[in-house]
Length: 282
Image (cartoon, rainbow, N blue to C red; front, top):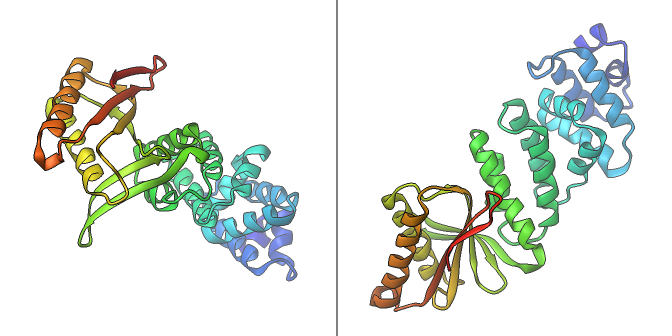
């Protein structure tokens, strides 16, 4: 076994000790052959950190190594002690899967350590909210790039800012057969819909299509009322504010005067989270 040959530290002890959790031994052995690992010192350091953990954190760290091999060892080694504890203390329904995704996304360069720490904190604060796991948690797990990771992080950050106690549910979906035709990010207790965007409002067509899609989903979803409700889109940055304002006015009028929309009274606003907290519409 390569670990026995090249390590004279904690990793060698794990590999040689038949009394050590077998899954952990397998994970360490696989890590030795993984391209995620730069040196055997990295494996030794990770094993040492895991040895210093106790209780559920120790078990969860070993499972992380078993589930992800070298990527898990790399993550354990490079997280500081406080952040490692945050990741291991996370206790949502899909925590084990999410920890594995942290390791994988970090190894692939899609997420950095700060993003992982923040996602773990926000997600744990939102534990138990309907739609959390099949919404942003699943988005993080399936992320194919850093932009997808940032989008998932923005959503849990905004939900945590609203407060778990104020949220009715997340990831409200509408299907046509097996095809998903609409989704709303967050529904607060009052019924208001909050959408999370990285950017918004750069072309007339893009603004109109996005508002149409979200308003339609509000109209057809059985648990959402459009009349007397608010659609709030929170974005890190926006394009043409005058163009956005014009489209908001047009869509509010369309919904209020068209029988197709049941002449509903809906309030549309865009909150710009660029430090200014500018509100467009509303």
